[in-house]
Amino acid sequence: MKVRVDVMLKDGVLDPQGEAVRHALGALGFAGVEGVRQGKVIELELADGTPESEVGRMCEQLLANTVIESYRIVME
Image 1 (cartoon, one colour):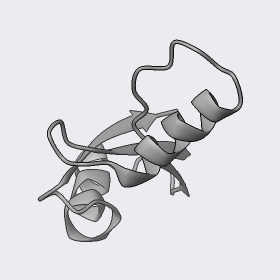
Image 2 (cartoon, one colour):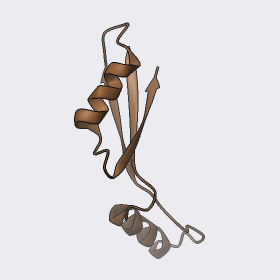
Image 3 (tube, one colour):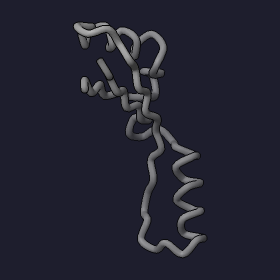
């Protein structure tokens, strides 16, 4: 079974990579980009029947820095 974990910086946490992308888009002529937040997507291939709570524990212990990041689990 495939599981996707989307990890993003929490609101209020500075995102220097997102700001660099926003600046670069402006320099390339893309007007109107007022903000960019950059995150990561982690795809897991797990045994069928793996509970979402197990994936949550993976996120809490390794996949996300829960002090500054939030995550969303998508069971596919």
